[in-house]
Length: 425
Image: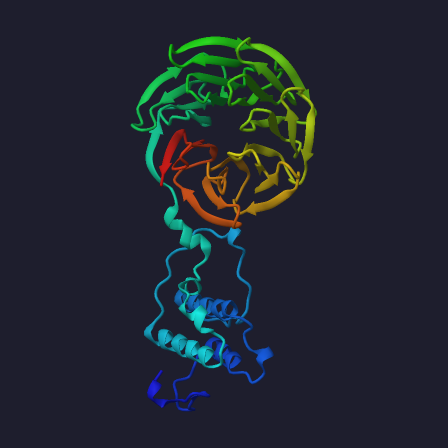
């Protein structure tokens, strides 16, 4: 645009008829800025900025179809990571500068807002946060079949994985070195858990038994029996007193780790129980079931405290945040839900995966969480801002399990592709 043909004074900006023709989309934005009636102009800086960003994006991607100046943006929680956009052409830059000048002349931009750099950064939040995404630092191979479960010691020095190949492998997550393979199971290992000190390993699976292993001596301590079907999940309380196991027999069992005695059999779910998790204080147990519900239980009495409903399909995994105030659930309905443990209210629902979910974990910061899916991806979410931070791709098949270290800087995923991936940021 030849700016020498534009007339500007303190009260008006006009473009002479012989100026270069504006695109219809940009012309609509300009004309709305210049409308005589204030009520017909853009009502805020954000509204104008949104219209300009949409216009720039469409031009950069080469779309020529008309765009409504105020078409709504897609929810951030459903976006996939954005590919970098090519910079606008010099012509487009001049046109957008002209529109900004128009907006300034009619008082749309106040000086304080103009000087605030935050309003100029209008990238979708996912694109901004993507720089803090995890990247793969190691891929561990050695299992001969899908890896159902993964657990990481609190000190970050011990990583355990359980597989359809009937084995449990112990790894050094820092070096990727395989330290030990346990062969005690006769069928698929679908559940594993590590005590906080990293010395006790608990495993369960299709053979319906639970095995306790001493990782210092590398010996089997005890085999616990009682379930009538596949064991899908095991969990150890933070004080290492209680062990919980969840089974396709629709029950949860609470065991005393020291005496190896069964304390309670919890009944209430009407279908397979896929997942169990202790609250940080060890007083509450959460369970997730194929019946579509999540239940909270009193560990001391075995009584059900509450039942959460809202998912439209099986709930595959459940996790507490580091303070025990919030609960996350991952479902076959393709969503992650966040619940308030005290008020028993649903706080938010994330959607974005392309298939059933398999696992969910909170980052220790309590603000972000990760979910995995049969779609082969891991998604990172900021539940406070209700945004998708990014999508981690690298596995060649279903991602089945996730675990994070206490620092929140390391994430480990296991997959049907027979590998473990260690992600770091």
